[in-house]
Length: 223
Image 1: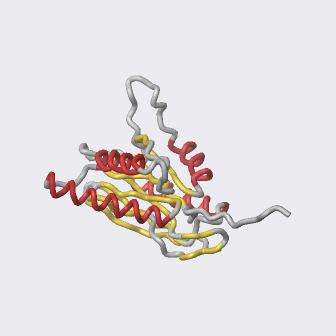
Image 2: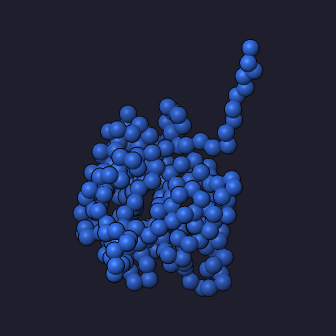
Image 3: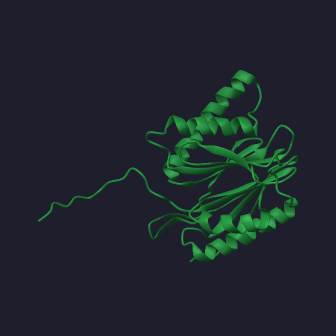
């Protein structure tokens, strides 16, 4: 008889989906509030969106213990930056910091799939999408998490950004107005919730613009 043993993993995937859309003068970040493990719902009220700076917000899916450790690490590094430079980090600077932080842990990675959004130095919306070991790209829109395979084709169909190979380089921001982008996010989550068991309960939407940051919520199906 072959010897059997339980395999232990330091990781878990707590599910959930995140979306970010950059516009001419705004950025919309959205994520559901369900946190699961296997077929169990651990909580229906968990926010996956974290404010890193006045003009930078991160949404994360994956293993939420690692996400929490990553957020603490970024907060500490941002505090050091503020003491040294007497100002807040810009969104592109925070994007590079996040990439470096993830890459530093590449041999035992943070099991976190992040999308970072905010406003750049010109006041334009910017979105950066990541893999688990820090490879990143500036895009007009992105999605991460368990529902991303359902959400990205929808966004591609509606927003289709220009190829990065086109010369001269095209702007990555989406042509939608702020209210249209918020409506689109609500539509994609309502759709993804129907097919992905790890996405649901409530949708948290964070909008960044020149006036600051504001949040709104929408109920999703709870089964």
